[in-house]
Image 1 (cartoon, rainbow, N blue to C red):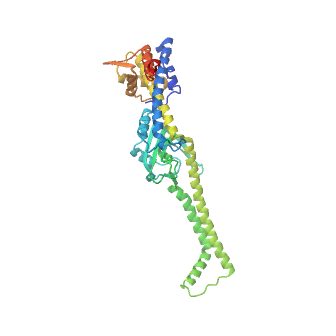
Image 2: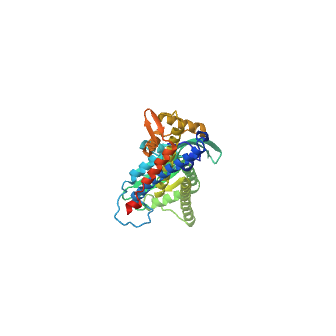
Image 3: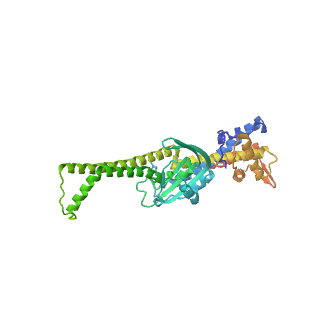
Amino acid sequence: MIQAPVHPVFQAGCCSDVFAADELDTDGNNRFRELCRLMQSVFHFEYHDKLEALKNSYMPINPDRDTRAIEAESGDGDFAGQLEELLDKANYEKLSEAKLAMAFEESSLFKIRLNVNFNDFSDVVIYTRGESLHSEEQTSFFGLVSKTIEFSNFDRVVVFIKFASGVDQDKPGSTMLKMFQNVPKADIEMLFPNTTVGMRVIDKLVIGVPALVGGTAIFTTKMGASFVLLGTLIGYWLGIISEPVSLDQAALVALVASVGGIASYLFKQFSNFKNRKLAFMQTLTENLYFKNLDNNAGVFHRLIDEAEEKECKEAFLAYYFLLVKQDITDADTLDSTIESWFRATWDCDVDFEVDDALNKLRNLGLVFETPPALTAVDIERGCEILDKRWDDYFSYSPETTS
C-alpha cells in the first residue's frame, strides 16, 4: 500500500525511471525497463478481464445504461463482491459503522446541519483511502473574528448505495455509485443523495431572537390598540360582552392595517429563514461540485486503473530491490528497505504491503525461495517468463486451426 504523498513520476509507466541510476548499468536499466513494460502488459490484460466482468454484473443495475437488454436481467449478480475486491486492490478500506457514526456526530465545517434518513436505503457501503490533516481559517461576526481550525480529510471516498423498495421511483436507478475527493470527516453526510439541510441552534437563535424582539415591539407600540378593539368585537359577537362596539371607518382602517402589518412581518421572517436555507444549500452544492470525481460505471473504470497502477508499482519496487540488494533475504528486510528508500529519496512515509507485492512476484514466477534466502530471477530470465506468460494467454496457432 502506498498511501503517503508520492512523487508525481511514480506512475506505473515510468516507475522504472525513478530508481538510483548507479545500481544498474545502462544496458541493465534498458533491460529492466523492458521487463517492467512486459509486467505492466500482463497486469493490464488481467485487469481488462476484471473490468469486463464488472461491466457485465453492473449492467442490470446501471442507471445510465443506454443499451437494450437482450435477455432477462435481475439483481446485481456478484457486483458488490467484485467491487469490494477491486477496492481492496486499490488500497481502499471499508468505513465501519462506528467510524461513520462518529463522523456524523462531529460538528460540520460548513456551519450547516445535515440530516440523512437511512430508511431510504437497503444497503450503504462507504470505502475510504488516505487521511490527511488540513487547516482552514474561518470567520464569524461579519468577518470581525477569525480563527484557524484543523480537521481531517478523507483523500478518496467511494459510496455504494442500494435504495430501499418503494423509495427509488424518483431516482435514476435502484443503486448509486459515486467517488469523491478531499471530503472532511465531519461532513461525510453531504455525500448521501437524500441529505436535507437543517437549522443549527445558533441559526435558529439568529433568526428567532430578533423576530421575537421585533414582533413584541411592533405589537405593543403599533398594534396593541387595534387588537384590543378586535378582541372587544369578537367578545360582543360571542355574547361575552353586552355593550355594543362602535366600529367606524377610522377604526376599521386601523384594524386592517394592523392585521396586514403583522402578516407582512411574519412573511419577512419566513423569507429570512428560506434565504438562509438557500445559502446553506448553495454551500453544499458548491462543495459537492468540486469534490465529485466520478459516478456509477465511471467509478469502477477509474478504480480499475488505480488498482492496476498500484499492482504494478508494488511489483516493480519489490522486484528491483530484490534484484540489486544482495543482503535482502526475507520479507521484513525488503519491507523496511523500500520504506527507508522512500523516506530518504522522496521525503515521504509509506506503508508498503510487502506480502502482497511478493505474492504477485511469486504468481509471475519472478522470485524463488530457498529458505532462508529470497531471490529475484535475473532480468533476462524474467523477460522470458513474462513473454511466455503473455503468449500463453492466446491459444490460437495456424497449426491448431488447420
